[in-house]
Amino acid sequence: MHWRDVEEIAISLEENYPDEEIDDLKLKDIEELVKSLSDFDDHEIETSNNVLQEILEAWKEVREGGLEH
Image 1 (tube, rainbow, N blue to C red):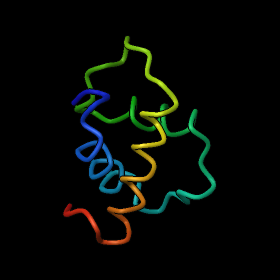
Image 2: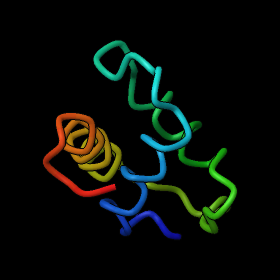
Image 3: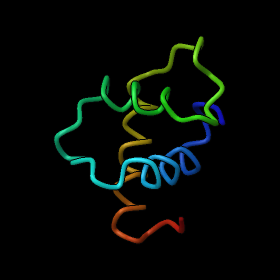
């Protein structure tokens, strides 16, 4: 999984961190959670705040049932 796999990352975050208070997370928190996922491969690659924001929004969609997981 890589930074541009936004939906896949969001689904994995929900599966691994279902009790996380998404609205309380900062973008840096999102980055750390993504890097902690066992199937994430882009550890050495910097990402942008835009990508982190996309991941956060997709995670909210997953939690609300908008994306399948």
